[in-house]
Structures are given as C-alpha cells and as structure tokens.
Image (cartoon, rainbow, N blue to C red; front, side, top):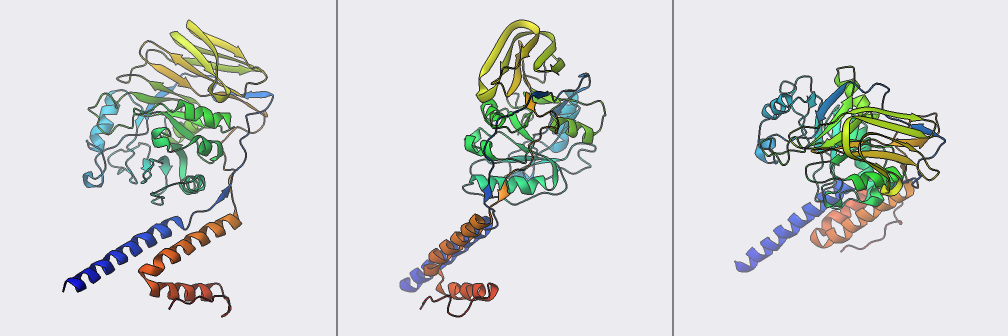
Length: 403
C-alpha cells in the first residue's frame, strides 16, 4: 500500500511539474527577439520646446491610483468612487483609477480618462496604459530580458493612446541598459510616492529617447497622506476634453510636481526657446532653479529668483529644469536638440530579428523536450510527430530513440 501511494505521489508531482513547466514555456514562446538601434544623442542645430507659447490653462491630473478590485485580491483600500471624489475635492481636473489589468466602469468615472496598470511579474516591470481599446493580459511573470519588455510595449501600444513606464527604479524593473534600447513608449513616471526615478529618465534622454515626464501618487489608500496628493502632473490644455489633454501630455506640454496635500506654491509661466537660447519663468521666486543636461549633469543653478536663461553649449543635447520651492518641487520637460523638421517622438525603432527569434523558440522547445522527457516520455513522441507533419519533414530527418 505504501509503495503504491509513493508511486502515485511521485507520478502526481511529476505531472504537476510537467504542467507548470509547459505553461511557462507556452507563456514565453511567443516573444520576439529584437535588433535595437544604438543609442544616439539628440542632435541638430535647432531646439525643440515642448511648451506652448501661452501657458495659462493648467490642469492638475493623477493617472495612477488603485481602488478595491478583483474582490480584494489586489492592494486597494477604497472604492473607485471614493477615490475619484477625493481627488475632485482637491481640485484635480482629471483623476484616473488604474487597477491591475482592469478598467474602471464608465458609470463610476464618467468622462474620466481610462487607464489600467499592466504587469504581473516578480520584478515590477509594469506599464500604465492610457486610453486603451482593450486590456492586454500578456506578460512574462518571471525573468524579463530587454526583448521581452519591448514585446510587451509593442502589444500595449497597438491598442492604446499612450504607454507609460511607471516607477522604473523599483526593483530596477527597467535597467539602464533597457532604457538605452527600448522604444515605442511615450512617458516615464519620474515621480511616484515610492521612488523618484529622475536618474532613469536622464538615462533615456541621454540615449536620444524623447520621452516626457509624468508624476503620480500610485496611491493604494486614499487616507494615507504619505502616498496621496504627493505627486501630480500639470498639463497645459485650453480644450477641456480628455483627447486634447492626453495629446498635450504625450507631446510634452506638461510638468510634474512633488509636494504635500496637492499644494504647489508656484506655477510655470513661460518656457521660450530661440536659436540656441532658452528662457523660463515661474510665477513666484523659487528657492533655486537647477538646469540638468546630458548624463544627468547639473549645468547651472540660480537662487532666489523666478526666472532663468541659458545658452546651449556645443556638448549640450538637452536641458531640463528642476524648480525647488519652499514646500514643493517642479520637474519640467526638457528642451532638446533636433533637426528643425520632424517633431521628436520616441517612435518604435526596434525590429524583429527573425533568425534569433526562431533560435530562441527552438531552444525553448528543446529545453521543454529535454526536461519533459523524464516526466512524460510519451508526450515527446506526439510532439515530434506533430513537428514532422507541421514542418513537412522527411522520415529520416528525425532519428531519436525514445524507448
């Protein structure tokens, strides 16, 4: 009896391992392997200024907040309506619920901007998907290499208005090497209640990726002041509709703020770029204004003033400003070099490497067969038969004794 029980137990464990391993292989099998363009610094004799001439219609927004969802499995304390009401009372023009793999019902947030957070994996490689036409459930739950991350960005971007890389610093979800290569996304969540990812943003910018800033709470508990009303995005938009607002966001006509209780005691009035000279002005005197350029190097700092100007040097590729106020800090989008013709966008530049993709999938299948053979020898025969028929192989191509 004990011998039979042990035998059945081993068989059961073997079957479970076989099923789990097969599921993992099936999840990773569709991924493409990409050729990535080499990082290129911003170049050109002209300056691209993402800000409009009239900065007078600022909309306070938050795109990252979690409500109770999936019957409480995910971390969200309050209902979507409670959260949206709280943001409305604080003067936010737009606030969104961004639950994992789930869109809030339209009757809960009528007229709001649809957003969901994508990602179910151990390294917190997540995405904020803005104005999607559908929810994408594809993901790689274990280790993610750069091509896997590009594959997901491509899938998300195909059915959404914008793709954001949120909190890239957490668990180093997006390494510096990733950010030098990845393309096809629009924004980086530089400000989040958990981390400040300015360094990651500079890596992308220094690699010639014109991606713009977004700041969000990423709150999971609206009553926790340490994670709520602490980071937000100000978007300049005179047309009060969500399409125009998001268009301005992904074109860089916005800035992000870190503060407390949704209060910023300053406001951006102007950013001008003429020839190779830039000028910026805020409403009130700031404690300091810091200009940052290629590789995150501080280029200039001024104190106790509400304005600043700067002339690009030959080695300057972009310049972004950080404005330190008494109780808040403003992070502006960069003014960048360009050719004076096409508007800078982080368009998809990665291309599928067909040979490496076939090789990658073949290796996965080979690993599956090698590891699965001891667990379920009979299945290998069926797989080889299927491959032979699928690929129209001759009888003498596969010679493998599985007896």
